[in-house]
Image (cartoon, rainbow, N blue to C red; front, side, top):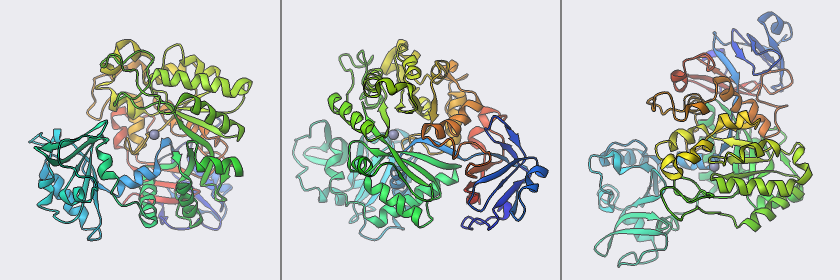
Length: 543
Ligand SMILES: [Zn+2]
């Protein structure tokens, strides 16, 4: 273990000092330093040369970074913490190369479950198997005759159940009826075990609800997983009142080793609570809620993103406004009255235009003020609308890995012309728009190294396509790092707390075995996180 710190050790009475480091402070006054000291409360008191810092750190516990690169703790500006936790509570089937491998992973996972608990899994893809036909319930029944098994496909648009799971469904599944917007696969009159789109609800509806113990364990795993990849903060997009309670309880117990900026889940109880009680902040500073997340449209992959012109591969389809426009506008006005920051999901160019129009109307002359309202994703935007983000001072909260996940099919959906405003990070930068970067985990990996890599290369992990996809939109390594630190902090009004390493801010930082700014871009995903520190305490140390 480097630095002699224990993951659970409390902050030393006199704080700590980190020496022998190559520190990227992200602070303009002093971009590079070799030592860092913090006080007992975990606030940075000195940054500079070893001599300068040791002089101001009498009584502090020394930690030797052994030449590691240190960057500010990474912040994911768009993520779903409980979603990650729930994913971590189910069997991971991503990348399984055969049905046998799926079964083997399920058997391993089932060892940790109570005998009668549902076995939930996710991530199978029959296209990766030698036999590419859809799987069947019978194949699961052989190994799981009594325990209910329910496995979501990699895209979330199909599920694979065993017979024990199908027996719990109250509606008779035999015959030839089909639900609207979905399909039950059948062999004759008998369901095979695969349920597509809305048909999945039949099984999802009988999965027992998560109890508090499950949710607490899910959050514990999510928080630990985030720390292991160098995250010290997340903006949780769509936090329910119950989620906020759980985060608060973890913070009370000193178990929340992550700074969570929560955005209420739409026009909901959580929003009403904030309208009544004002912005929330836990005394530890680790949980706050001062904003709300709304949805304008759907996603591009399923052709739910709202487009101005029809989809290039689906004539007549312009996508879906998932919140009725009048209600969306009224909810934004309510949030404004309550003094909250608004973050709205908009993926298509019609969705983005609608939100910009709404923000213009709701903010009025205050658009010139420091509201920091955000558009989440801003994925396909009309070139005419990009400058409006700057005029309205709206933050574009974008996810580099969405670009590299979507690049194989995005052009089919929107055609070559609209591609100019798609995942157009550089164009936003050039227009003077503030970016904040994130991952949207668990939709993508929570690992910010993959986000940095995607931002800098616009390539997949195999280095495809050569030179990168739409390469003129790449960010520099420093811009990408700022997106996950200073810019993400700014997007949550936290630039006075985190995102840089300078006196007065929290001692949230990450030790890496290589410098993400000078490493060859292809090396970014492989940089090791040696340890992650929050308020001057190591909350993760590499084994
Ligand atoms: Zn999201």
